[in-house]
Image 1 (spheres, rainbow, N blue to C red):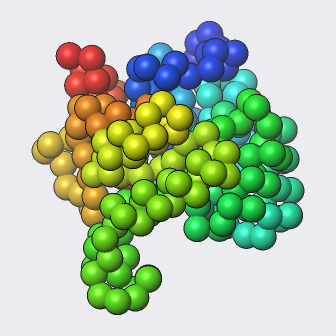
Image 2 (tube, helix red, strand yellow; image 1 turned 180 degrees about the horizontal axis):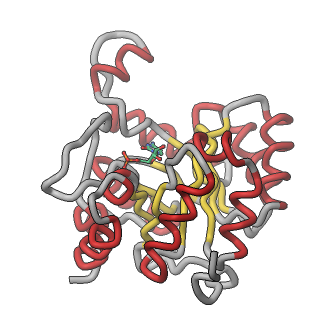
Image 3 (cartoon, protein in one colour; image 1 turned 135 degrees about the vertical axis):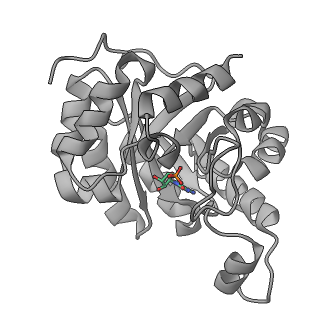
Length: 244
Ligand code: C5P
């Protein structure tokens, strides 16, 4: 595949402007690279999640970096600190820009992840998955319906104490987290949908402009782009909404 464009990898993400990240949720390398070629300059930051990483391994990260793209490796690690630190060192060595652990792994695990990831790779702590609502998260923690916002804030405190660069939360909680933490925690928001779209398996969704208004630094765009009849047009539509 032809090189897609100049590298942006030496430039850390600006804190003030939101950065869209497209999730390459594909079962194979070729499909992922087809989308990267199709989107060209309109997307320079890609998320590799557990599906693609399980299928294609570190090669996919290396290839995206060679294409001049930044990579968010979303493996949502959750294990004992020593094991997470070992995985983080490999992630760091791949040149990944952003990666994730579950905040519920605890402060020592977050600290170990942050130390092993080094300064160039930002560790974001997942709070409560955007596919969970008060009722389904209530099944996790017991006691009927759970107050998701309270839990997100609690886990944001833990993430901050552990030195995470940011958290992953839905657009529903982003504004409150931004108010509490100011610029000290970056916010990465998945569950983004255009108004015409179905929520699919996501429970706490937000429009691109809604996420920006709530203070998001990064938006994760999944099926909004990958399941669109015309992914390039869908990407342009999101970009138009981000800078009207
Ligand atoms: O297709 P959709 O926009 O729902 O995809 C959302 C992407 O964001 C998926 O790759 C999913 O793994 C990821 N994600 C999420 N919720 C989180 C963290 C990551 O949906 N809390």
